[in-house]
Length: 497
Image (cartoon, rainbow, N blue to C red):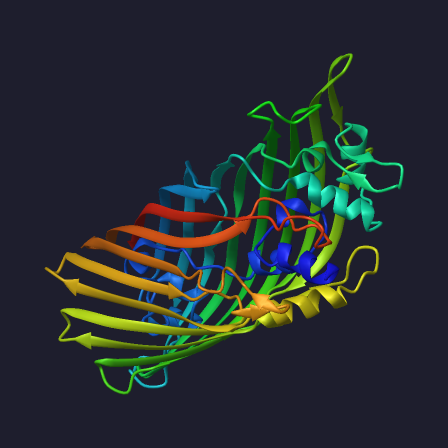
C-alpha cells in the first residue's frame, strides 16, 4: 500500500513536491511538440514529407534537400498561457504572457558541379535552432472546507520513518508536526477534523531549444536524403506556494501555514536524425525519418521553506524554517526513440495537403547515472508501467491565392502518454490529450517572405495539490482539474538568395 500511494502521487505529475528524480521528470523532457517557422506552424507542423523549411530539420532532415537556394529566417512569437482550475467546487484562473524566438536558421545551397538534372543536383547545409517546448505558465488553485491536509503527507511520512530535511524537519521546526505520548506524529488539523482552506500557486518558466547542423541531398529531384545532429539546451524553473489557513476559526492552535518549493533544472542533450523523402510523381511526396534518443546531462537545484502562524494559550507565534543546505544533483536522462511516416499531395501547383504520423514509446525513457552512483532501477520500472506508446498526428494544408499570397491551416493531435491502468489503479490523466489548431498566411515578393501563424493549444489534466500519504490512515487527496489553453502568434521574416 505504501508503494502504491507514493507512486499514485507522482503519476499525476507532482515534481514540485519532490527533490528526487522520478517518472515526472522523464515525461516532462520527453513529451514536446516542435515550434519552428510560422509557415510550418500554420500548417500544423505537418512537414515530414514537404521540406524547404527549416522546421523540417527537427522532423525529417531530408526536407533540407528540397531547398534550391540559400535562406536566412527569423521567427519571433508572442503568446499567452491561461490555466483554469477547479478544486472542491472553487474555480480559479491565472495566466502568463511570454515573448520568445521560435526559430533562427541559415541554409546554404552548395553547388555540386553537376550541370544535368540527374544524379546529385543539390547539396544543402543548414544551421540554426527550433524551439521544442515552452514551459512558461502560471496557475492558482483554491478550495475551502477541505477533508484532508498537506500535513497528512508530512505526518504519514514521519510515522513511516521517512524523514526529510526538506519536509518533515521543517514542519517539526515550525510546530505544525506534533508527536503524542505513543510516539505517533499528527497535526492540529487532523486532530480537529480538518475544515480548513487551501491554496496553491505554481509558476513555471523555461524552454527546450534544439540547435541543429543538418545536411540535405537532392538526387534527380526524386529522392532526398538528410542527416542532422542536434544539441538541446534545457532550462526549467518552477516555484510553488502551498497555503492552508483556518478560514472558519474553529481549529485550535492552527492559524495558517505556507510551504514553498523551488526547483531549477538545467542541462544539455544530444541526438541525431536521419530521413528520406521520395517523389514517385510530381504530385505525391512520401517521407520517413528516425530520431535517436536524446541523451541529456541534467542538473537539479531544489529548496523548500515553511512559514506558520499558531496561537497558543499564552499568545501567538510565527515560525519560519529552511533546510541547512540547498539540494543539488546531477543525473542523465535518455528520451525515447522516435519515428515519423509522412505523406503530401500537391494539387495543381495551387495547394497541398500533408500528414505526419509520429510514433514514440514514452515507457522506454530512462533515468541514468545519478551523481552519487544511483542507478534509478525502481524509477525506470515505474516509467515502464505508467507510460505507453502513442501515435501523434499532424495535418496541414496550404492554398495559393495568388503568386504572392498563400493561406494555411493545420491540426495536431498528441494522445496522452499515460497508460489507462498502472500500479493497480486507473490513471486520471489517461485521456489528457493535447489538441492544437492553427491557421496562417504567407507573402512572398522576390527573395523576401513574411509568414504569420496563429496557434491554439488545449489540454485538460488532473493533479493533486500534495502527494498521498504513505498510509491509508489518512484521507486521499482530492484531484484538481487544470484546463490549459495556449494562444500564440508567430512571425517569420526571411530572405532567399
